[in-house]
Each structure stands twice: as C-alpha cells, then as structure tokens.
Length: 551
Image (cartoon, rainbow, N blue to C red; front, side, top):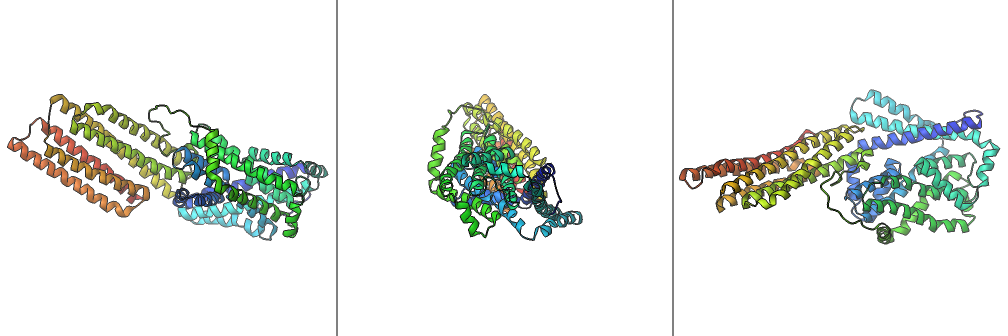
C-alpha cells in the first residue's frame, strides 16, 4: 500500500497505529473463536492431561487460536494453581504454546502475495454480516470474519509505514550498528517484555525485513532478536504467578527455563555458523519473510523436540529451585477447588472450571449431609463440630462461586455460556439448601441425645437404604452436570421416585408402629422431619439435573 512520501515521525506513528490495529484484530479474533467453540475449548484442555504429546498439541492449537502464548501460559498457571493439571502436564502445554505462537508469522508471510486487498475486504464482509444477521451465532461469526480482516488491515498499515523509515539513513545505520549477538538477544527479550507479545514483535521484524530494514546489519543478526522474543514472552506468566501456589510458580519457572535453556542450546550454533541466515536466504530464493518465519517456527519446534524426552528432569529441577512450603492449617478459602482469577480473561475456560467447582461444592454438601445423618443414627455429638465445618465450607465456597459467576457474566460471553451461568446460579442455591438440611439434621441429633430417644435397628436399616439411594442419585447428577448428559436425567428421576417411595413406606411403617405402641410418641416429629429432609435433599439434586433442560 502506498502512503506517499512519509517523514520519519509520520512513519513511526503509522507503525504504532498498524500494530494497534493488528493486535486489536487478533484480540477480537481470539475472543469470538472462544464464543463459537466454548465447549470445544474446554474439551481441548481436558485432553491435555492425557499425555505429553497431547499436551504439546493442545498448547500449540490453543495458542494458535488465542494468538498469544502468554494467554495460554497464564491459563495453564491457573489450571496448576487450581490443582486441575499437574506440573508435568503443564510443561507439555507450555512447550506447545511456543510452537502455536509462530502461526502469526505465517499470517504476516501472506503479505508478500497479492491477497491483501481481498483479505482486508473481510472487514466489510464481517461488518455486513453483523448488521444483517440477528442470530447470536451468525453475529459472532461476522465479528470473527471482520476481526480477521482487521488483522490484515493492521499488517498493511505496518507495511506502508516502512517507506519513511527505510528512507531514513540514520535509522538504517542505527539498526545495522548493533551486531553483538548477546545485545541483540537482550533487545528482543526487552522489547517483547514491554509489549508483552512476541507475535507483535516478530510481525514488526518481518515487515521491517520486507522493507529492507534488517536488524543487526543483516546475516544472523535478526535471528538473535527472534530468539530473544521467546525469553521476553515469559514476563506475562511470571507476573501471573504472583500470589499463586508453589506448583503454579514452578510452572512459570518451567516456562522461563524452557525458553532460556532452549535459546542457550541454539544460540552458540547460530553464532558459530555465521552464514546460517545466508544459507536460508539461498534456500528460499532470497525471501527474507520466509527465512525469518521458517526460523521462528523451526527454532520452537526443535527446542520442544529436544526437551520432550527430558520433561520430568526439568520439572524436578523446578521443584528443587522452588521447594514445597510448609503446610499450615487453614480454614476453607476462596482458592479451594477449581476457580482462579487467571481464567477470567478466557470466559469459556472459566465457565468450564465453574462447572467443576459447582460439583465439587455439591460433594462437600453431600458429605456433610451423610456425616450429619451418621451423627443422628449413632447419637454421636462428638462429630458435630466436624460436620459444621463442612457446612461452613459449603457456604464459603458458594459465596465465592456467586462472586466468580458475576465476574464472568461481566465478560463478553456467548448466549450458550450465559445459559450455563444462569444454570450454575440455580445449582449453587440447591447446594446451599442441601447443606442447610445437614444443619437441620444436626439439630435433630442434639434433641435425640438430650431426650434419650432411640430407634430400632430395623428403622435405622430402612433409613440407611434411603440415604444409599440418595448417594447414588448424587453420583449420577454429578455425571449429568459435568458431562452435560441430559439422557441420564431419566435415571435420576427414577432414583428420586425410589426415594419418594422409601419416604412413603417409612412413614406408613412408622404410623403402624405408633398404632401398635411399638414406637414412642416423642420419636414421631423427629422421625418425620428426618425422612422429609432426606427427601428434600433428593429434590434439590433433581433440580440440578433438570436445569440442563433449560439450556
């Protein structure tokens, strides 16, 4: 694109504008891809735990989508901090992220072909789609297409800005005067640390090369800068580790060590083989863009290939450098479970974690219910304090879930994700109700002990049968909620019907015993209340299962 004769100052401003448009396009592109494939993104990260090769693939693909290795690494730190991903699994994803970030360079590589004008037209096509299509999914697709066009608009503005810079002899001399490999490496790391985007820095380097502005005076100089960008990209994840647990800090350290050691391995080779860039230049027909992009991708793939067999040893090194802290007894906190503030920048992932957090909290609530039931059956007041701690934990986690849901709601989420958020609000209420029922049963225990009331072994066995069915229903509901398996709702309903039948039978048998004088009248209200409360807990589990039908 010809912007005419531009001065140095105008070119510099135009370059900054181009970078801004370029990054804005990628930001919108990544956000809208997330909206369209939220469930697939959550499943993608679930597959990362399978093996190290899957982890590398997931890291590469996620970064290609988000267009930022920093975003992927920050999410990985969140997963490790939440205990969802082990350090070894995180290491594989981090290595893959370095490969995925090179996709941006290949998009810039397209600038050498006569496709830019048509690619920029995507901005208008996408805008028209958003105005014409009223459905949420098509509207999002329109923004996605417009964002892709915006990427190419930014790229073309950057290319156009180079005319003024390339004609400035002072700038050319300054760029060519820095030839020290270590200094060039530090420049790449420093600029990337400031911009917090290795993709943006690499893209600018490619555009500069197209205009004849080669950093480092030509030869291997620009390759040292490219290697430096990998080190500079670690800054964002390091910042995100502040306040995280020990393993999350180790994940950030691994990211830094991986990039630093990988650079130290390749760096001497590039220094010794002074004609390496010239060899690439010959291979690719004198095309600087292809040389730089090819090296960036090959460098990251090669580092990953070298590291992959030795992941566990580097993880061990991280564990030595950052040892385990002494554990302290703490009450339940907001950080317990799967939520982490780092996920908020990727709402689809945050919602997936919220689903797990909800079922986790439901597990604590059902655990407290079972424990309260046992205190009643065994008339064991010594266990009451432990049950109350679990009930308090449910209330604390429930509050945190609500606050986290509100924060996620404030982000731009898809219509489907909005429905999940609303469903989780309702599930959260049901979970608190189950914990309240556990608290009710604790009250019955105190009365049973105080008044010296007793229940026969037959009655206790019938009550245990009812609780066993409820626990079976709970396991099924967790499966339904976590896997969105609406087909199993019918099975949940059948179990709830069994609990209703147990309640009717227990109350009918109780009345017969009362009539025959086999049961003390003092036991009546407590027995009826206990059975009714267990049945109510089953109702709340059923509500959680059926909430999926409203999606």
